[in-house]
Image (cartoon, rainbow, N blue to C red; front, side, top):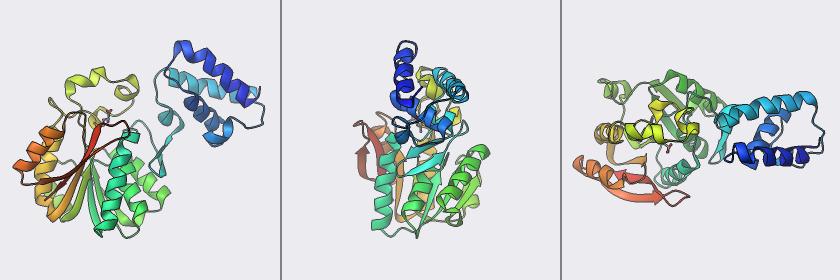
Length: 283
Ligand code: GLN
């Protein structure tokens, strides 16, 4: 069967059992089987053989069981780059691209040459910033060694290993300041920020396949912001920036915590869906 007919028939069939699965999901899964780009697969003039169909069906089964497509095929496009992903890291979200876009422009405009990221996960934020800015060096910490393995693989793929240092640590470690032992002009973080009681209400794609440790922000979702703001007040040089991804309706609470630590607010930006998603603070 030709790829185009195959995809159209499949999409019709699964509409009833799994309405969330999109035509793009199917194209990406088939592209993975055929070792092609998702953009090529629809018009590829090739016949699928039975082995390829069998392989596709086994990937589709995982998707129907709610595994997100990027975690089935092992990579995801984010901002301008492609990242290796697996179940040890939070899937990069389009919502987070605004954070990278404004931070990258800020780094270029202010000639910032050394930054810190708290909670690197796949590395999609810190590594995008390094790939965009050839004079930048960076330190990234993560509590998960498995996540750091993914970030290291992505650093190799983006050709920035010489400019990044990864440390397996938590911002709650007593000796975290000593471990870092540096001052920074910019600190960035997309910390866990979902209130613990809301984790169960998230989509299966998120709650079953993203690491809980990357999502759960404690009782009120603000536990990690409190600690990171306190820490950053010490680790930032005067005039340095602290940039956060934030959850829905968290802006006012986070600003209050920031003001208590003598940080001021520079800007709040919305993501592509119009939700306030990125906050820029200054020491
Ligand atoms: N934005 C993610 C979500 O809504 C959460 C990411 C995070 O907690 N940092 O699932």
